[in-house]
Image 1 (spheres, rainbow, N blue to C red):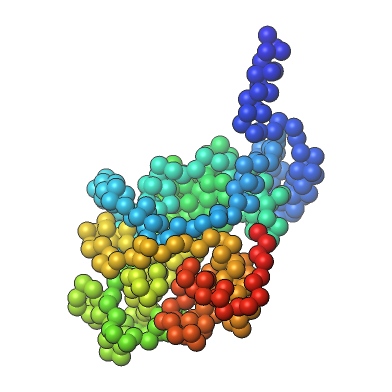
Image 2 (spheres, one colour):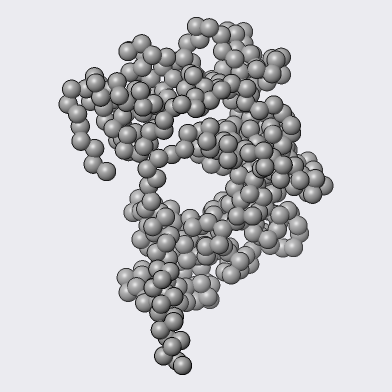
Length: 409
């Protein structure tokens, strides 16, 4: 009978890709990390409790190493994140937690719609908080994750250990994403340490089981990151004929009124930009000059501090609008555009650099440096310099640059 149990266990472990054999290098790493942790105030009891029997999670390493070949176009991303169903559920949550949200909003000065929006974006209103052991995930990443990020993961692991040591969350309850994000609104451990609050008054900051703690902590984070009470995230606008596309850059900031007075930019919904206020603002083209256009205000920058993705921040704003029954985006998205693959983005960067428009590196990511180089090229060849990378531009660059570089994946 014991033999059958052993064979069954071996089959289960093999089938699901788990390892029951201790990794000797990982054991050495744990010993070294333990000494470092003791020196910065982690108690031996905490380390005994969390590190005993701990093994690396191979699935976490696979997820860390994974580089998606294609990214979804922003309109596809928005279709999912700001869907009619998510708005419907969010409005139900608003009715269910209205008294709590009203108290949080009054205390921190953050509109309840944005708290609901982030809650929906991060965990589908608590449905998908993650099932990975945070301690195990972070230990795995600190041990064998991408080398450039191991110091970051070590910092997060120390913070997670302090969370357990302080009694905010137990090891069993400290579960989240594969990358160690915790709870309803997915705080990484150092953010939890710095910004989480005990809003339900039970003496613990529990972002997994306590909705009051999770939502109030999110409000506290936004408030301390510079949230402007009463200000919107941005709004959709209409540009005049002959608009200078070089002005559509987050580095070009003017008071909202000046965009109207100097450049005749007006909201799609009518009235005045920012209701006539003098908020600092910039013009944003998430899908280039042939897609919707927005003017963004300071709170958009604050959302970006929560997640450094323009698509994410735009989704938070639009979802918040949907929860308040505001109109959806009016202009059409360029649905016929084909998304560039990671390799094609790298090729675009390399071709721009070879053509004399330095992108400051080739990494397959369209960041500010690549957008700036692309704008210069677009302007020189007669296209609106919107910095938006497309397959058509890649094809033209291939024709321009005589030496066709070989991209190594």
